[in-house]
Image (cartoon, rainbow over all chains, first blue to last red; front, top):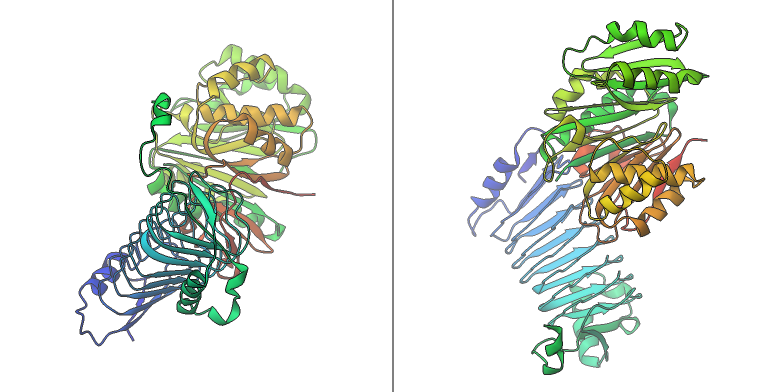
Length: 229
Length: 298
């Protein structure tokens, strides 16, 4: 297993080595030591390898990830797995603001808490947070799902389009055009699948969750609002 | 952008290391704020005495002013010069006289801080070099706060460098910008709070000074700031015995904290904390928006 110690190697050397891997590489399991909060660790991966990072990481870790699995045994800074396309990113601690921002696909699992704006402008990513999420999470969310086992901060799902939000605890408030929606058998099955994918299906009862989504009243201009312009 | 660091010791045996730990944290934040830097160190105090940190233009001969000011203290004055700054130790009762003589005879010299324990140093330049010029690494104390500035809305001058101190043993560093500082500054001036600059961060410091003067504890003063200050901010503040952290409700400005049984540490990013002893086992978390955090020595 290749081991890269960031106490001696640079981030550029690490990321270049990972970017140089072909899809048929035999070096499928990497370990990164001494991340020390550095930025952009394991960003831009494109092949199905596993990268384990031993410690806390800084901004934009595993950004733009495609196919790879990145596991962080610590906390993550701003913009974890931003614009992820596919694959899996898992942080064993907390994630700072804007985790999973603009993500198109793949699975992001946050075992601790996520700070503000988790899943902002998400476009198809599935995010599972075992703790709570901060304010303005799923702001302008377009597609995908955000599953929160704890509570959600103020203005959950503000200006949301079509993403599905499942919260087991209590949202402090719902944002503009975000409403509670019925939890049908179909949704319970979808939620079960997300939890199973995150590896916590057995621990959690899906009937404890409530579902939130778009009221779809902001989709089109409404003539009654003309005085506002 | 700006960078902030702060360190509050719980284990007093670490006091000799405070300066070195803070210098390391500050150096890591150079790339968040390469324009200027400053730091406040809460060191040893002496019963019945006050410390004044003075800042003069490059080349100021602080020993030359000793005669006039020394007379105001009845000859009971000690002076320690560090680069462009000097720390005077004077009897507490002589504070007003010394400040009056200074303002009268040496208008070119600024009083950066006063108090029983605090010393504040700030200059233009790369933060690691600023720390080196003042010998931060060899300083000792119970808590320290540092700032690295990337100037966005006012010039790169020492006046714009932080921390700001508007009351005895008080200081504040700020990452962000306030939008109601002019209104608030006028209101606070009417309350007798003095300001040296037109800087928004100094107003935040003055606001806390006013609240504490009116009897609020640090935590209550921070709570009041949430309602009265409009804008973006992450603050780290120091008092003689206390250390506090506050983020605005929007929380755009980054903040990471770490706590062990030996210290509480603050950094704009985790990188600033990565070299602290025992950080591997520390509780590391992001302070909640609109939630005052503070610690005080008994």
